[in-house]
Amino acid sequence: MKIIKQDQFGFLIPDVPTRYRANCAREWGLFVSGETGAMTAMQASEAGLTKGNFVELALCLTQERTLSFEPNYINEPFTEIWGIPTAGGMKDQFGENASELSTFLLHRQSKDRMGMMLAGFGRQAFNAWVNDGMQANPEEFALTKMTEFFFTHIFRFEMVQTEGKYGTYFYVQATCKPATSPLELSAIKAAQEIYQGHQNGLGYCTDPRIEDNETKCLAQQQIIIEPITIPAKRALKASKAK
Image (spheres, rainbow, N blue to C red):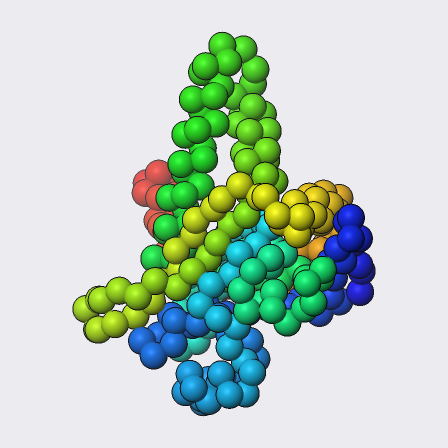
């Protein structure tokens, strides 16, 4: 366990990652924790396992993952979010001056919408590079601008109800706003410290279960690909020999 103190606020980095799930099923539309597979949304709420339909947080890190959660999701892309909650049910577990590093996954439509928002940041960074005279290295310039943006804004992830082929469901809509309150500004400072520590190899934004899941998925992808490609290579060599 590590505690980061910023101003009058304390932020916890737990030894065991605090992971939530975005349950987007038709009766849910809630962030949840713990084992809720056999429960209804009402039962999970009564058990204290639901954490509201939104969270606002200071982003520490986002990572792209390939994961499987059988039987519904096999080797599918996810976006892993790490951040410090500043509002919503995840934050309400703590006192006014405290929060902790938390994580959850985005998938399919929720992941795509997050990607669209990040693409917008990228365009802003590109326009800033052009307007600045295009003298700096564009990749380094864009990274600097993106980092500045991330660590001046609070990101809101909120369940939005919609209709699909199989009826009502929810997706997670990502938006952002400038950080203004003392808690938000301090949480951003802590998020920067966590990000830098993770980049320096301290592993703050690491969940061993997710790491193991992805390792198995990537190994499985290799097993699936090799029987297709190797015989083809052998056939090509045989044809050249003739």
